[in-house]
Amino acid sequence: MISLQSFTKAYYCTGIRLGYLLASEQIIDILRASKAPWTVSRFAELAGLAFLANRDAYRERRRNLPALRETFVTRLESTGLFQNIVSSELNFLLAKLRPGQDVVHLQEYLLERRMLVRSCDNIPGMPPGYVRMQVRCGKENLALVEACASYARL
Image 1 (cartoon, helix red, strand yellow):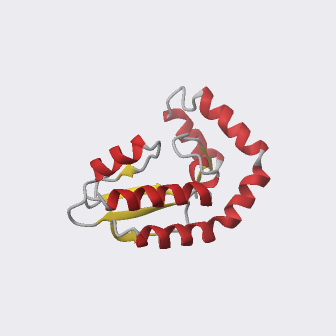
Image 2 (image 1 turned 90 degrees about the horizontal axis):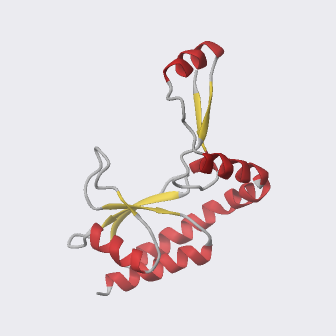
Image 3 (image 1 turned 135 degrees about the vertical axis):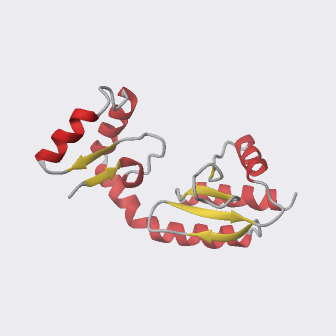
């Protein structure tokens, strides 16, 4: 059995690309023999140490995640921008834009407002028109909802 854990999901640190693997010694030896010599950047290492030092704060944030996610989804649905919103137990959701809306234009609009959503158009097997959004604190979620509502009115 192999268990692969990601800091991205556990500590809400999208883009850090840090995690760890738990497995038998034999499996780890096999994997170690085929891995690249440099697999974790210094930045990711420092970020991981900071996350671990603040574990209690992240656990508290995780307890609040279901309520934050539910409110976020409800508010995003009210914007009229999305045809479908797929929620999960994780700290992000997928939202399918309504017909006639364009992922690239939405991304550009949000970037001008210092907000980033991920286009899923380049993910193999994903249908076009989806964006991925991270569930964050209430204030940041509300700012993204308001920006999406503003975009939908254009």
